[in-house]
Length: 183
Length: 287
Image (cartoon, rainbow over all chains, first blue to last red; front, side, top):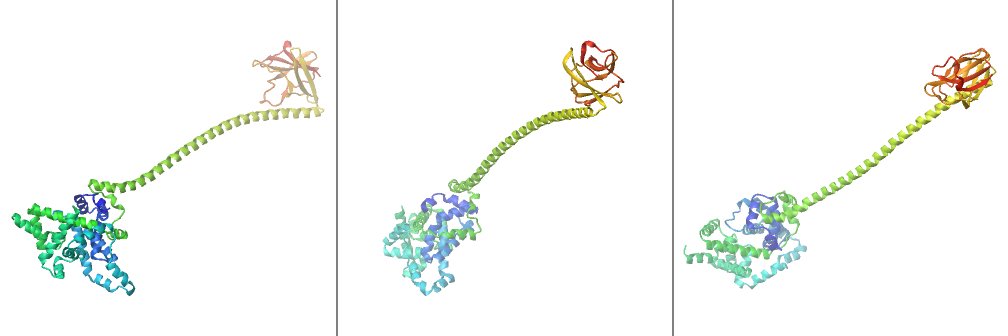
């Protein structure tokens, strides 16, 4: 479904419309990419309400800083995804998020914990998750931290107690694995 | 940079970190510099980006619908209105044109309904006007025929009044002892004619009553003349006009005559004659 929506408009056209602040393009952009970006966000922030807040903030930022996007430096989606990732990581580290964790009622705790460990039944996701799980465990661990948990490679290196170079290589190998699977 | 070095650079994983936005500003600038100089680096970045994008697309999760609503509210954009401004891109236009057609379709449909309603109203008005026009014509005809009727009736009424007056006078004169009624009957010239003359015994005045006469019409050049026969000699008592004229008084006063043995009426040229034309003696009666 998302792939179909995406194909309805080429990237340079989208960028042009976005940078001319055409309100219609935001709608298009949203219908094309909101679920992909929400997928990225909700892997970093499992709390639905907060994740949706971040999704909204992401599109606000996309709208407001469209002029800063330079298409010679990368794809539009990469730029949007990094906005989403950065806002998610910011949220994860904010007082807001920590408060929301503290404010969980005893009654809600069980469901909150469930939420934290929620298994996604998105059929699109299942295959990829499978794929990531089929990666060698060391590649999988790095990709999980960097992609799902919003860690920087430096933090991942600390967390996994690995040299930076190794982390970088493993990220690369994992992504090459992904590339292979998509081709 | 040599091919080996380039390969090592690509394999270092820095490009993946670049795509993940996980580099410092200086490192980012270095990668962009490399990419602008080496197509291999540029292609590698593009491939990584595409892989990450595909990965994200395949891991998409549909957010709840009210996120979009809130987003457009927050940005102060009309969620429905964006079709007003259309980008220059054909595919995109195609997509939004569907929405726009829906919108204008509604407007066109409304206008079409309005047009149909207008035409219907026009037709109904036209029919109503035609009906009214026909009725008006009929009314005009009716008024004209009523006017004719009215004139006819007015004529009849005045005729009746005239005859009534004459009859009244006749009754009065018949009742009175002063008046003598001389009945004149038709002569050879006009056998069916008859007429009465009223002669006052006291003042000798003579009256004729148009109602109490039955004489044929004269032509335009002739009229009736009343004669009294006094000792065998005719004496003119004056002329009188058409018997059916409603413009006259019913009674007409003629000349007085002191004595007479008989009265007679002849047809004479207009203005009367000195001597009666005996061939045209219409009625005569003795006292």
